[in-house]
Image 1 (cartoon, one colour):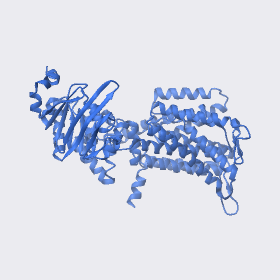
Image 2 (cartoon, one colour):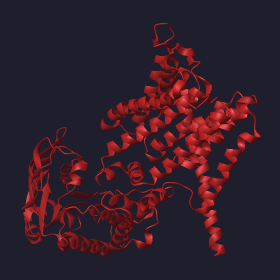
Image 3 (cartoon, helix red, strand yellow):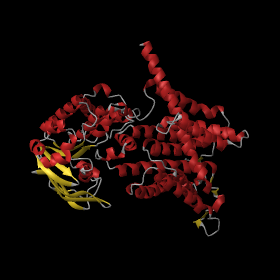
Image 4 (cartoon, chains in turn orange, red):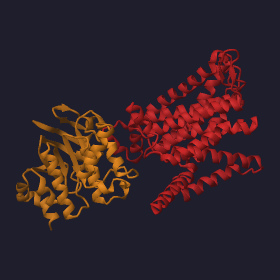
Amino acid sequence: MSLLELRKLNKHFGGLHVTNAVDLTLEAGEIHCLIGPNGAGKSTLFRLILGEHHPGSGDVLFAGENITALKSFARIRRGLSVKFQVPGVFKGLSVRQNLEIALQSRHRGRELEAEIDRLLVFLGLESEQAQSAGNLSHGQKQWLEIGMAISLKPSLLLLDEPTAGMSPEETHLTGEMVQRLNAGGMTVLAIEHDMAFVRQVAQRVTVLHLGQVFAQGSIDEIVADERVAAIYLGQAHA
Amino acid sequence: MSGLVSFFRRLEGPQTVGRGPAFWSLFAVVMMIALAYPLFSDGYTVGNTVYFFVWVFIALSLCLIWGYGGSLSFGQTAFFGIAGYGYGILTLNFGSAYGFTLVALVAAVAIAAFFAALLGYFMFFGRIAGVFLGIVTLAVTLMLERFMAQTAGPEWHIGSARLNGFNGMSAMPPLTIPWPGEPIVLFADVGLYYFVLGLLVFVYLALRILMNSSFGNVIVAIRENPERAEMLGYDVRKYQLITFVIGAALAGISGVLYTAWGQYITPSSMGMTAAALPLIWVAVGGRSDLTSTVVGTLVVLAAFQALTIYGSQYALVFMGVLLVLTVLIAPNGLVLGTMNWLGRLAARLSQRAG
């Protein structure tokens, strides 16, 4: 069964048509990467899925339910979760508190503490737990936010550039983290520019260009597609 | 039982400064001094101290909404005024027999909270935030001030209570506790002192528990990053509204106590100066911590009064300078800054000793 289905999604900002009749289907259990040049409409598509923007026309279906009219928090409660492009951690609070806030709606008391400890180990942030989240390195902030996003046990995890600003090693570790989550049953939709990461994790890739679905397929098919190379990969690897 | 223990454990936590035996011993000492204080002082001075205590509630309301919640409300005085006038109107109509003044206290605070729920609904569900929230709330309090100021004519009355325009209402009964034999009238000295002190301690401890609960976690999360909080599944608008209503109720308590203390209330209690002063107390003390807010408010109020008594016409200018200095030197508040510094010093000393 498809977990997420976008039907003829349209979004205008004034005269700018940022999302143009986008159809996209995500199967449960897959890792799907969304690529495309800057301004292709990737982040806007995320915001439409999350309910931060509302489409001019078209529908968003999640697990068979039409969620187009739902507020963001209601979509999250149905099993969506997100890591933003710019890490959205609670900077003034400790790492531990950040995770507590994410986990407290599902766990209480000792169980909550144990869950936080478990997640800290998973993220490799045990020694930073008392630190202010604002003092973490960029990569650690990304991990912390991924940790907050997955603590909701979502069925669909949206990652907007999860490896931006990371070293190649950190990027690889993040890829492994995503694969482990996926092995646990989580469906992942990731926007990413780092082709090494896409190659490492993606089972399917969608190329977005000028607000439209430009191409779709496996990473090898996409890389072999000369039209895609012309608009994106060619420029990126030049 | 374990539920009760974990409930009281929330008296300490990441959202409130002060923990462990040292803090609570100090708290106990301060409480003992506060309880014994009327024995060593005269009625007038005690009554004056009550006046300081009365303002702490509105300061705590701002601490909650602004310091913890991140929404700068410039109009807490609106709820102060509504509750103050509410108490006056109710008690002038129904008197003080059978403990009605206490009913009026609760009812007046409830009216202020209801008004806040209405205003807050339109603000938060209309996604008004940041500086606009300050502008709207300031406009509301100034509007109420203007409105009440023009109610001088005899046609402006509710029941037998005349609103009296700019002169305000007066001669409402003080708080009265029904007692077999003779009711206890809480005039603005020792009686009211213990009543207000008890209420203040209760509110302070209850807010500590609230802010260290999962509700408090969400409130500070919204201050830090509302978008992230929403994307963790929290209905941000609902949490902001509840915080705003609790804050309004606290400001309302200030309003009622003030009215009962002096047996008068005027429109200027909702004016520009009145609206600005609590911001200064809270900012100077340390808006993101309850204890800092309480201590800061009491110190600044006492200093302000000392200045005005000893002949300085520049007391308000001094307050402005104090605010500017705070923003420049310790943006999180002077009291909070000092407490954090003491905490670090103690940690370093114990580390060296260990």
